[in-house]
Amino acid sequence: MDIKIVNFEKTKVAVLEHRAPPDRVFESVSKFIEWRNHSRLSPVKSSKTFGIIYDNPETTPSDEFRFDICGSVLKDVPENQYSVFTSLIPAGRCAVLRHNGSLDNVGKSICSMYADWLPNSGKELRYSPCFFHYITLITDVEEHDLKTDIYMPLETNHERHTLL
Image (cartoon, rainbow, N blue to C red):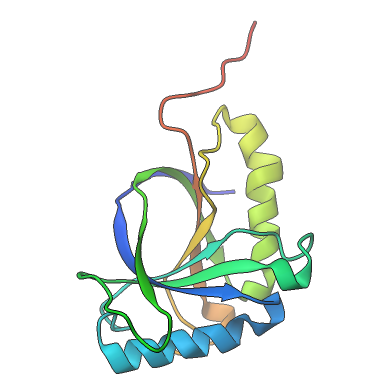
């Protein structure tokens, strides 16, 4: 695994909360795209697109699944009919893994980060959800050409120490 440690900068985002089964995420994505096109506050071509995942879709009851669809913004989002609002992705140190290809397999990459890399890294998780930065979007490239960075928030100065 090619995991890099980076300092993620605080990012103001427009957020649409998806609180429904995972297989309906694309309905929410469509609604967010509609908001983006209508508001012009987070243009797809010049803004970053993120997803914040709070729950494992394989272990969370379908009707309790939580996922936020986000786009970077420069100013606050006014009240709107789409229920999109302003929030922040906090700054901090993160482990980052580039996932290439279909998002159907992104869970395998996440599991490898948490189960294989983290226990041997000497790092500790920050109390913050994992999030994605969609480098390429399905509207622009074929599914097998998608590039998604997976961010695992880490504690800043709390390294685990192994006793010899």
